[in-house]
Length: 276
Image 1: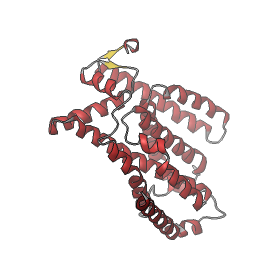
Image 2: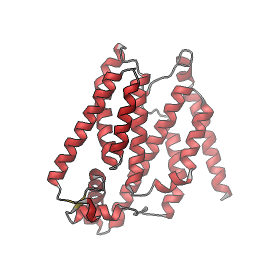
Image 3: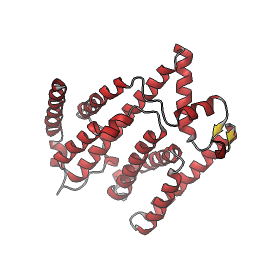
Image 4: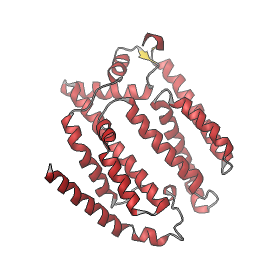
């Protein structure tokens, strides 16, 4: 175990020194430490590969110990409901479909459901690491505090619940990831980006579409997210900055969500929640 900590310590030192070198230009180019919006800059740079690898290495021992991953909570119910064509509305439609199709696809190839579970969990682990890295970089952009970035990175890499659930098939994991990403992108676009800037206007449509797609996926990630979204919508009524565009975009997301949900209910044979 001592060698593990030595290796992780060396990786941490490499991350710090690499980012210290790579981000000097980023800090120097800012004026009076003004926040730099990620909506007007690249999401990831070459230096982030080391940070990403650091998180993945930190999560690897726990995942290997549970290989092919934790197939628990409602995953079995979600799989059976889609597989037996009797979908339970209490579970998120998209998560149930993706999980089931992943398992059945790789079962048809290897005659083993474990391969599908492994692929699903590995994909989720990589997605989670990318989202956590993006959030850490976002906080650095608005604070310019290197120690805070490193501290957040260490928290995401070693916090036991995060490490444990990264390789778990439960819908709560993907739902939490999408909620985090949505809130950060929402704040980034509406409160940090200067929407009147000509340069940002060119990218405005792209970021609106991205936020709409992310919002619909987030709403589909878990049933009670819809209620949280409605409460979040009400809270936005009291904030003046870009209020009209914010509310319009959120209404569009709700309409798209209800439209997609209605379509999937027609395509999928559903079962009332009370049976579950």
